[in-house]
Image 1 (tube, rainbow, N blue to C red):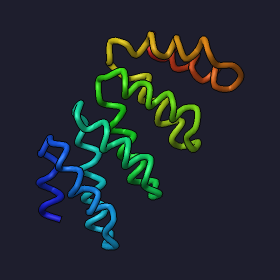
Image 2: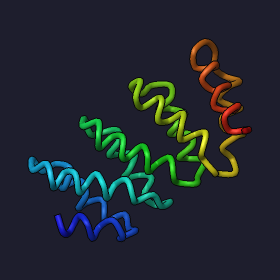
Image 3: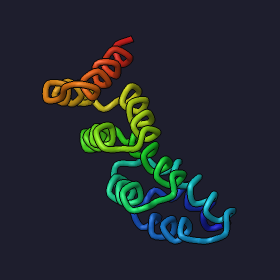
Image 4: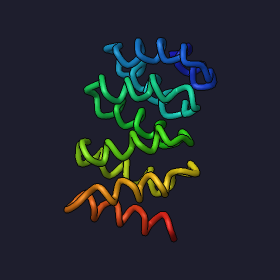
Length: 137
């Protein structure tokens, strides 16, 4: 647990090797420490390991923590990942992705959301309209 607590301040891709081991541990306290660290690591080079955690893990807490961190990475790649989650995620993940898109501060975020809106219809289109309206407040 001490190693996982220390990992929260290690902004390196290699840190995620430790976190992946932590989320695989059966001990609840160890897993919780790993999830907490995942929530705090949102730097540009973390996108790949975070997206891998989100895709590969079945634990909703791990998936949510990874998605939350992805949503704090200021890149077009992160915005596109959130848009994909809006299309294909669970209802809880879709809501989190929408909230993260509202707050996302990448320069290209609004343009990417508008481009996605032009390609969508139905429920997804309405969700993207709501995201754009909330971004413009």
